[in-house]
Image (cartoon, rainbow, N blue to C red; front, side):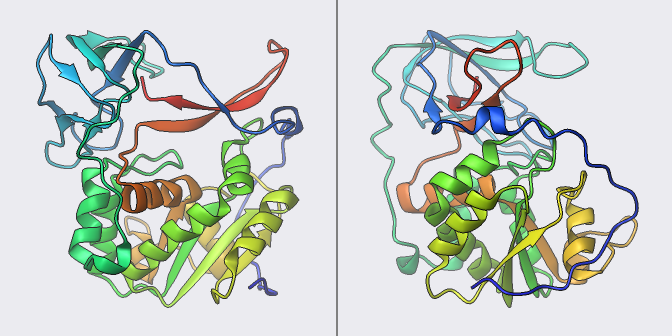
Length: 309
């Protein structure tokens, strides 16, 4: 359901030029399969994953190629092909430093691993659900990159009142979450239902900025009979930040050095919820993400689902 919700203000905030309309004129596109995928072993907060394949080995799409070491997330082959090299490679970080990666020469078949299996969450217990999420290598899709299974485990050890599904996307230009909500609202909500179950959260609040009317409408339409709340909040950067969003929706502040779970709240990005859906219902690990390609240099700005690497 959609309902009136009392909103609060956080200190500061700006409203820069949005520049979002350029990349929302067409549906999400599928990127072409590249000949070489260079897959970083650090895609999350924590330690780099440890390779579990060898150079020259054939791998399938979705196959585990690196296991988490301590706090971290599993890494999977984004497509089928041959492991060409394991070692330092250019890394997408402002430092410009290289980092450990697995390079896969794709074979053009894009063939899924035969062990990829769908599941019905109603037939799985909570530990099996959590294991599916952990095995899928999901880390927060909102930017922080915290391993989702670890965040959920921490939430299970607290008393969670509210699960916030974050669809704010307040940064200029970026529209990946906006388009995801427009096109895959049902999947986001199915993933959110799994998150709510694992956290035993009393209520679910889906927060979307008021400059995304089509996303708001899509999420409201997909709610069905779920007694959840779709809340439209004012467009103000950085309202997408976890602590700022909690303040806007609840008036509460996360204590310095504390976690949202300490005040009964867990936040998850809409992309994370969709990835949880894919991991449980389809058995598919996190090997791609929707990325906004935009700016004056492009003839046709758009959002593209592209493979990691």
